[in-house]
Image 1: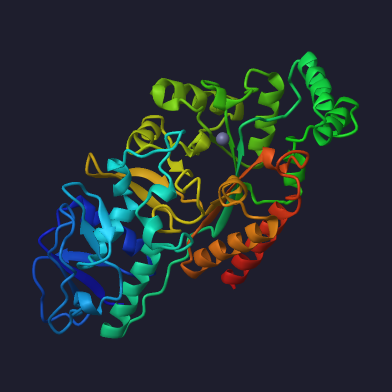
Image 2 (image 1 turned 30 degrees about the vertical axis):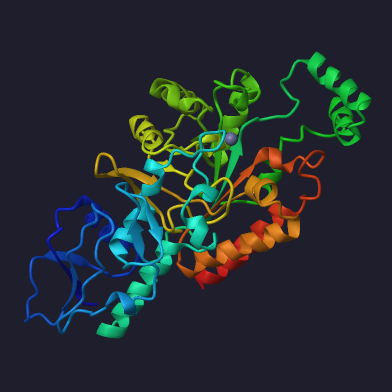
Length: 442
Ligand SMILES: [Zn+2]
């Protein structure tokens, strides 16, 4: 495998280094180096010329020339182009020229989110608000496709094949525990009051559920931990993200003051990874977040290094700077609430780039490809469609040898209420994941 030398006057650009580092990490044996000019002598070197400007979009297309350098003019580059809109760093697709590093950077760093003021009622940047939603199908990992186009072009020109480097682990599941239990731990008068209310308003399924719980005939509907255990997930294949504080009504009845809660989380942590699920208003103070992390660390007696934001409340760059400040090393919140797919355009694990401070951080982003509530509430899919949609997403991840992470909730196993009819969906999705990814390993 020859070395790929990038001839550029941007060798000091932290943006270019970030992009190049990402592309390098996608392939086996790919090594990039920067240089000022091409050399004639070494047959083990090929050249890519890049004199564009990642700081001022749009930059001109990648220039490829000379004997050992690919000549790829924009007309021959079968990809969309990016254009600047006004003075901001917002780009739109269509027309103009395509600049691969600029486009990859724009996606990985989520540049459009820095300038967008449109958010939903939870302060979230949604797919429907993204420029991507106007031009692309949600399930496509765009960056991965672009990078593959580049790899194919390299293969055609130079006669060597770049092969995708598989992520260490091809799939994982994250279960968000907003409420450890539905009834357990609540004052008895509240449970009884609910019991009569359900009866009076003829909410019979819930009434029966409560009756069974009160008479000890069935366990708490959110108490699904032993069922999940039966799946025999490897230790780090499953992560429980636990809400351990209450700052807002959206945090629900948090059980973190109960001793049973400590016992539950301790037991879960002996079987699987535990991450923090910060309370709704975590951005109010970094101390608040640190206190919740410390609480979980003391229960589990281990360092908490993984995070997923409750309600996916991710605000760039503040949220990620908070995580860095609290010692978190891995974030699992990168994805859209209202659409499946790949918010940074990739199913590969990558570092977070802080656009305002112009630096590559040490924080790893593990993008997720789908969430239970997205399938049911936002996309309004029926169970069969949900399984088919999930399968499409997993096949994309398999294609690029990335990592498929999915979000489920312990409350999504509550068949008496809005998950009625979804009894087999999680199980089917697990079967699909195992089938698709076990296959890809062989
Ligand atoms: Zn949550």
